[in-house]
Length: 161
Picture 1 (cartoon, rainbow, N blue to C red):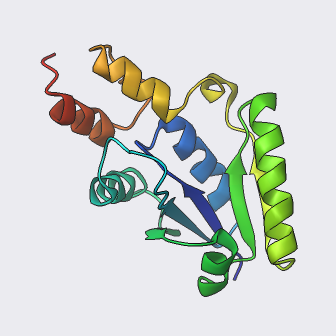
Picture 2: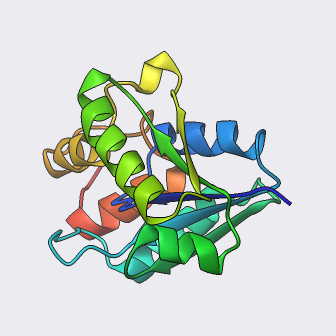
Picture 3: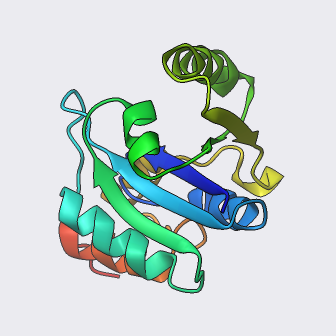
């Protein structure tokens, strides 16, 4: 069984993230979408809120698991028996950072490959920070996130639409 890990902060999960999930499930038998706990980041949503939103958003996929982890990604991948880490590349600006991370992960565990997937071009500008900013300014995020995320943003920010 080919298992892939798709790590991220997912604060919140966007349609761009889901586009990567959609591509990954066609390549792997199982995809684990996992929140990487990062003490340096101050997410808008709690880990449990993000897990709930992701679970709801990936319900249509029978071969997707949702989880979270601490520590090194390659160690987590080993616990899941994963052979690959999936990363989305939106633009060249992502490439340098993601390449460094992939090479370091390869150095730490040569058995785990990093697979870069390009999202649909309509998502190349999209990221969670932009979604949060639009929502904070009471903009409509309907076309950028699943309905569960839009509702969660509205509740969190008490947006009246």
